Length: 220
Image (cartoon, rainbow, N blue to C red; front, top):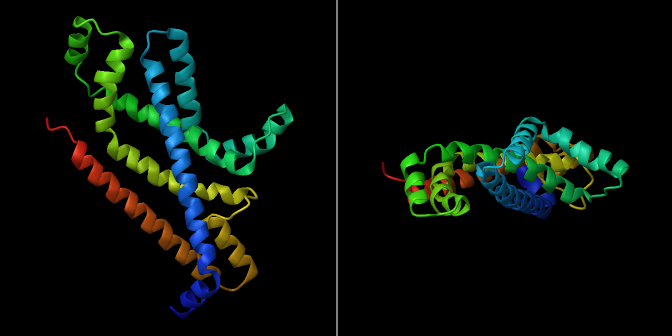
């Protein structure tokens, strides 16, 4: 316990900044991935076979590629193609692409819970496919995937440790712990404190997701 107190005395502000950076990377990448995932999902529902083929490939690729491999490609391979992206945007882009693929996959599952009769009724009212998707199908699909999206957000928060693989101007939790372990003998205490912060963040996200799910749950 004394070692943790000393650690907080020496690195307390640094841990606070690292936690804020972790939350920042999580929030930006999740919002970007969620928005992109909705766009991909809507496009997959349109009656355009070539587009559906391409986007299905997109989902399968980014849903199955290791995040660290994608980050290495963006940081080290894209410059050879004259595409330069700074380190922090590279981490956000990596997480957003992976998040968008999982979002599209979850929403596709959620769409399957929407009754065909509702779609047929909307067609009989003269609604266009895009209006049916945005007004009838997508809102119900979103309600049914709150729990999977909560799990995705937790996984995304933990995956921000990818940022420790690149020299960001600031340090997220994993990078800070690695530095402390290299510079001092407080490595175990630092790992324990970072784990507690990850755990607390995950539990907070899980609580928020459960609360939201109760509010939007459809009684069947």
